[in-house]
Length: 107
Image 1 (cartoon, rainbow, N blue to C red):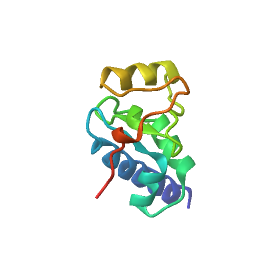
Image 2: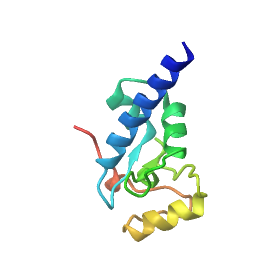
Image 3: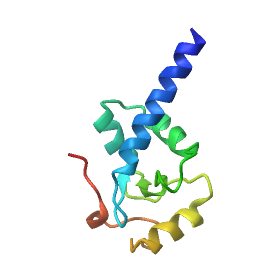
Image 4: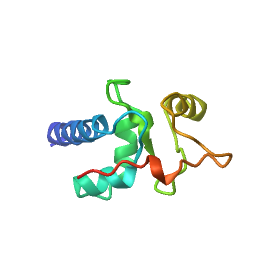
C-alpha cells in the first residue's frame, strides 16, 4: 500500500510542476489557483511539492504566492524569492505583497 501512496504523491507533484511551468516570466499564480485547477484543496501538499522542486528553475516555483498576494515561503528563503520575482519585473510592496496585475490565471 505504501508504494501506491508514493506513486500517487509523485503523480500529484508532476501535475503541480506542469502547471507551475505554465506561469510565464513576469507573472505569478497562487497555491489556491493551482489547487483549483487540480480540483483539490490540498494547498499544503502543493506547497510541499514546490518546496521539494528538483527542477528549478525549469519549474519556476518562485512564481507561486499566497492567495492574499503575499510572497509566501521559498526553500531558499523569502529574500531569494523576492529577488527572483523582482528580476522578472514584478513589484513587491513594503508589505511583501504582489500587485494583482501580475496574477496569471489558468484557463
